[in-house]
Image 1 (tube, helix red, strand yellow):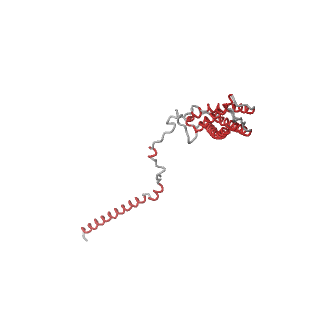
Image 2 (tube, rainbow, N blue to C red):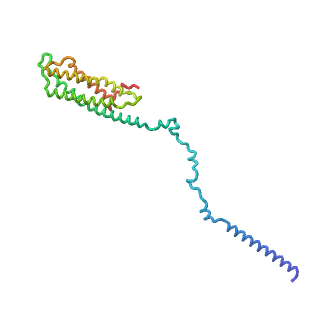
Image 3 (tube, rainbow, N blue to C red):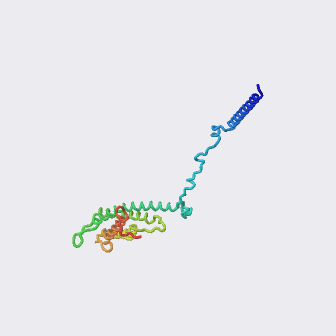
Length: 245
C-alpha cells in the first residue's frame, strides 16, 4: 500500500469522524430542547384564563346613568313620604265618601216628605168646608221630616269636619255644590221650625197663618237646592257652567 493511498484513507476517516460527531451534537441539543419545553396540557392547566366575569365590561363603564332626584334639585326631605299628610288625605277621603253616600240616601226621605206634605195640611179654604188632615197622615209626614232632618245634619257633619288640605281651593262643580250649602243649609233649619208652628196651629183648629204658611214654600226651595247640589257633583250628570279656575 502506497503512502498516498494511506493518506487518502486517513483524510476520509477524519471527515467521517467529524460528520458523526456533528450529528451526535445536534441530536443531543434537540433532546435537551424537547426536555426543557413545557407540556401543553400542563401549561393549559397552570395558566389562568380570564373569564367573562373577570374581564372589565367596557360598555358598562361608558354607559351613561339616568339622573336621580338629587340631580334634579330635590332634597332628601322633599323626596321622603309625608306620613302625616297621607293620613290626613286618607281620613278626608273616607269622610267625604260617607258624606256622598249619606247625601244620596237623605234624598229619599226628603222626597217622601214633600210627597206627603199635601196630605198633612187642611183643605177647604176660601169658603169651602175645611177638612182637617188625619192624625195618621200628619204623624207620618212629621216622622219623615224628622228622619230627613237627622240624616241631613249627619251628612253635613262628614263634610264640615273632614280635614282640610292646606292651599286647596274648590273649583268647578264643587264650587256650585259648596255655594248651594248656603241655600239648603238654612232651609233645613227654617223648614222644620215653620213645620212645628204649622202643626201647632193645625192642632189648635186654626188656619195656618203667618210665617207658618211658608212652610211648604221653604220645603220646596230647600229640596230644589239640595237636589241641584247633588246633580252638580254626581256622575254622569255634571253642571259645567260653573267652571272657573
